[in-house]
Amino acid sequence: MDDFNGARVFFSPCGIGLGHVGRALPIADELRGRGAEVMFSTYLEGVDYVRRRGFQVVSSPPLSLESDSTGRLDMRASAISQGVSAVPRFMQQVTAEIEYMKAFKPDVVLSDTRLSSVIAGKLLGLPVALVLNQFMPIIPRSGFNGSLFKLIDGSVLTLLGRGWAASDVILIPDFPEPYTISRGSLRIPKPYKRLVRMVGFILPRRPEDVEDTGRVREEAGASEGQRLIYAAISGPTQEREPLVRLLRPMFEGFSDDYRVVMSLGRPDGGSTPSRSGALTTIPWVVDRFEYLKACDLVVCRGGHNTIMQSICYGKPAMIMPTPSHTEQYVNANRAKELGFAELVHQRDLSREAIIKVADELLSNPAYADNLAEINSKGFSNGIENTVSALSELLG
Image (cartoon, rainbow, N blue to C red):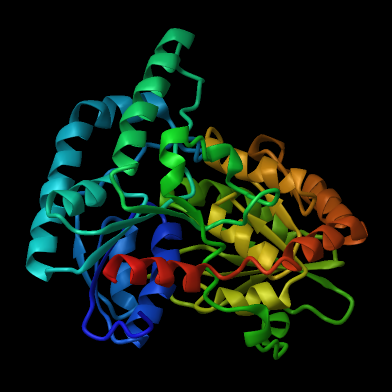
């Protein structure tokens, strides 16, 4: 079905941070362009972001994890604050999703990492596609004894696996082996693998479609010969802000060989740049692809979307995972294994350490060669393949 005219598609992305919503929106744009009617259900920061993009959106009861003042995921605090209430809150999500779906009357549901919408859709007899790059969340071991960890890990794997498998199809927005970035998070039991499709990365804009006018470098004060770093600091506020506080003074006093543009990841903060020393900060970068095109190096937290975008734009990456955020560490280690990125622990951050790693990433041709090899395979067709999967469910 190339024409989705009149088809009603219910999008239900996770609302923690903007990564899940961010990869759902280009699919929604494509479907709307083909005549589909689209409605979103999400929560937390995702709600306003979707609304700003001009889509109908409803707010679902939120679920999230606690972080401490350094951005480290605090599993004990999360267990205390949400452990008792997590189950009823999840059931509230399921109930809300059922009501929203009944009101919208969708022909198909597209969930991004939300079990509640998978369950709601199947209870209503609807076809459900699930977008997922972490089949099994890996729980940080610190703070738990071994026996408790094994019990939690095994129980969650069983429950989540059965829940995800209720979908009609599971779409992994990643590259096939041997280039899969989220491989360490895809512990998919054999009985469920029949549902899985590797659809390739969901890339809203290809590098050849982005014009590099020189505006970004001029905005950052980067003259000819100076290298430009794009620090794409994203994620939930409690994980993002501690890194911003650490990096700001380091980047301001950077070597004259570099200029840095740092996105603060605040959608409601405007887009007016502010320069101090070698650093230009922007509360919200409207078109991050302009910055990806113009920069020489990407600095990021370790989210799947940003790493994949840096690959597609041929930029080496310096990855600084949120402490105790196992998915980000898995992604960062995999990127390092594939030879286009380096991992820097937050505890080891200093101006000298960052410059040393940046120099290595930009002077060693092996990083660029490895990026070129991956990009030569043509795996950035996730939008087309996801739309095709939805078409099959509607057909």
